[in-house]
Amino acid sequence: MDTSSEQLAIAIGKALGGGQASAYTGTSYCQSGDHLVRHAVSVHPRAFMWSAKELPDGPTRTFDPRSLTLQTDGADDFSLSIDRIPFSFPESVKLSFPLSLPIWGRQLDDYHPVACEVNGSDTTLLLRHRVDPTIFGSFTFETESGIAKTLFTPTTALKLERDLPPESGEHGFGFVSGFGDPDLQNRLRPDENTH
Image (cartoon, rainbow, N blue to C red; front, side, top):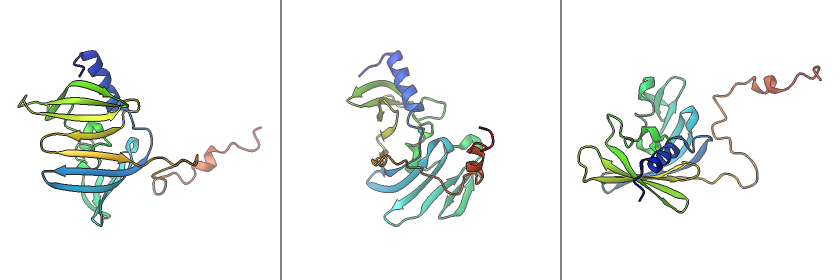
């Protein structure tokens, strides 16, 4: 376990900034006590777009970044102010938005990082509770990409398993429909008369 402030700062920087470039799908696991809930998630982190369907046949929650509204099965639940994004996102998508996690030592956070350890391709941050220093947790992410994998505390366990991208060389575009610019292709094509 490395407690040097330099290595800890590098690890925190990777955890906060990595893994945010592309849309993906996956499965999130949220456990509190003996209660485990699985969600099929589809996330585009940079656009703050996501959907989470409780498995096997529960409701689907989504976030509309244009109206800043959380929805359940297409019906508006409530709107968020810009300063509440992503803090009010549900546990099912919190690992997709690392700043939503209460682990960075901010004024209202429950935990703060105190050490880091690299194990193979993953880095784990050891977290200490702000009020009771005898309580610890851990946050694990892929070292190279910064993609979050797990968060464990005495009261909560979150795990995110991302689906692998297509191996056929095709690109997965995630959220393509509904938010695009219908004239984008015409604007991207060079004028045929300007050669």
